[in-house]
Image (cartoon, rainbow, N blue to C red; front, side, top):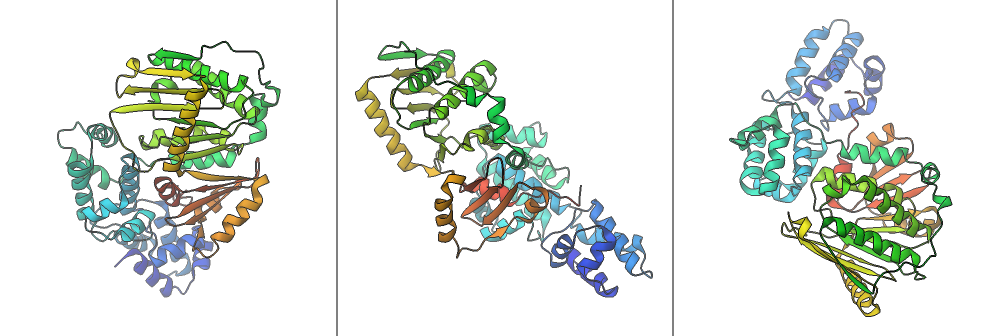
Length: 456
């Protein structure tokens, strides 16, 4: 008998509803309803099972709490596998390696929508051992690149000699390494205060420089360190000019070495702040073809800049290369381009130009790239309420729902999901702003977000 059937039988026996059981067990009525309907199953070793058993025993004095607990534990478990932890591990694995829901479903002979429901916790896995085995087979034999193989070893603690077996054990272990990157992103949105940030970086005290910046019409830069100088020179040329054209930025250069240079990072962010202070619009194509955690950290770092409403983020679909890296920036005053071979960042060549004809060429190139890109998210600030109203009007017939876990945990943000189309995050203060997210992996991760309040 399933957990939902077992719980339903006991609730019938003691004649209680979800609200009455919630009052004596400490488990919320909405969670009890989900357990009863089969939408969710509590972890085998969770406190929820103990609370429910104790609550039913209080409502029916003839029923032994230990007996109920034992039956609930058997019903919640399946073939000795903690299915909730298996689902958590599956989501972590798919996010880390950018596994397509459709391709995995096809490989293990599942309907894609059924697999999506398993991942969201609204459907149970009927044969978890077979399921975990099929997933492991596909990941190791059909999906993994050499780089992802190394990530897989780190995730599972494997030495690589029998990675498929080690992945299977990790999936079934119940010792999940849950991905907290979505939680961190959402909590950053929840707690971020633009007024405090502006004060902290002295944004209102920033003066846009007007002194001339001496730079030849064209200049070459070689190597990683000179590339950084090329970027800073591009920014200086941009905000010291009289040009008011929008700024275009697109780069898939390696982030690790940049992140370790705190001095450059500080100058880079200050340059962005000066351009925003000048009132320039920034169109940026983010490189999301990165490891999941690196991608999420990058997005989290851009939160303060997104809040200004002057940044318009995009991404490319299905762009994957392990050979070349490129950078393309252009403003009304300068253009920067460069390239390097993967793994040979130090050998790269970068070019900065103020030549009008070359700037026109790079501007056209930027426009063409934006036509190939997809919006990562639309950002509606308070002064764009009419545009946001037009969006909500156009989507009024679409089926959507509020993410209930987000409602309980967050006070300053509200999350609405239209499955497969968009996720709307509304921040209610500091500042009041709406984010309409359209990136598939990010939408899926937010939709699967669970704070697990009762189970912690």
